[in-house]
Structure formats: structure tokens, C-alpha cells
Image 1 (cartoon, helix red, strand yellow):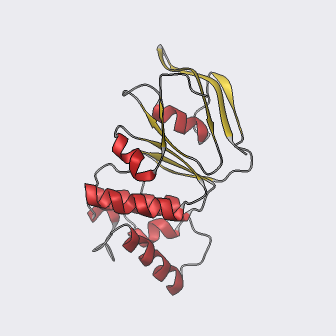
Image 2 (cartoon, rainbow, N blue to C red; image 1 turned 90 degrees about the vertical axis):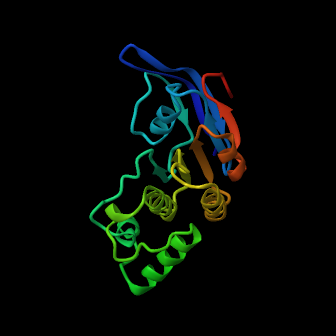
Amino acid sequence: MPIKIKHIWKSYGEQRVLADFSLTVEDGEKICLMGASGIGKTTILSILAGLVKPDFGEIEGMEGKKLSMVFQEDRLLEWADAFENVALILERKKSGMLREFLRGEFEAVGLHDYEEKPVSQLSGGMKRRVAIVRAVCAEGDLLLLDEPFKGLDDGTKEQVAAYLKGRFAGRTMVMVTHDARDAKLLGARIVMCGEKKS
């Protein structure tokens, strides 16, 4: 079932960030929201995630969908290591098999030299990849990504984009970015916020 965002309005105090925004996201589609800062891109993700309520308008097609999200901030447990941060959201037990599985996931995004270290000791780009792996391993139907490639060099971006496309093939993805090249890496349809779309 497609997700239909219908005539959404949202203001924070006197500042209006969304005015009559509509968008249809088909099942399995990859969408990239772009536009100037403050135009409401992150707010759209937050509304989809149920973290923010619109002032007016409605969203259809979210019923029964499991979602996962990569926020602008990594939102990791700084005292825990990379394995622990991802294992927390998995239903599987913390076993040797799980550790091997996660090692493969981390290798797929080019993450090395992270074992036995709290994530507080990892670089920004390394933390970003842990957050991405965690969201993907949650195995939702819908993946929301807010500036997912922040802090990654071009080669690492390509590797992470390939990982996302492979692991989330056939499922729906909505991403916020300021860089059209990010959308191209994911093969995403670009939607300019601030303009009416349907």
C-alpha cells in the first residue's frame, strides 16, 4: 500500500515549515527530499515516524508498517561498543552467531578498527555507519534517513549506498539530503520540498 501524505501543514510557533505539502510514495520506492534549510524536510520524516503531529492534513498507508530511522544525530549509546548498539534492537540473542552476522554488516559499510571500543572513541563517520547498520538491521518496511551520508568521504558514501540498496531492496526508503549526488547513489526520485507534489 502506498504512503499518501495529504495536504500537511506544520508550524513551530510563528514559523511555518510546511504549507499544504502532499506526496505519494509507492511501495518499494526510494524518495529523496531536497530543498533549502528550514523548508520542512526533517519535519516530514518526523511526521512519518509519528514523532511530530501535523497541524492539518493526514497520512494514509502507514498502518501496520514497521519503520526504522537514522536521525541527523547518531543517537548511539556512547558507553557501549558498536556490536552492543546494534544488538540492542535485535530480537536474536547475543550469541557468537549474532556477532559474526554483525561483523559482516560492519564490513559491508567499510567499518574497521571498532571492536572492543565504546562508540565515544569512534570518529564521526564511523558512528554514522553504526547508526545506519542499526537502522537497517531493525528490518523495517520503511527506512527514514536524515542526512545519512554526513561525515562520509565519497568512496565510503558509495559503499554505504550500495549496502543500503542491497539490504533494503524492494522496501521503501525516504531520505533527506542537500546533495543531489546522494540521491543518485541510491537511485532515488528527488522531491523538492516547498513545492506541491502528488
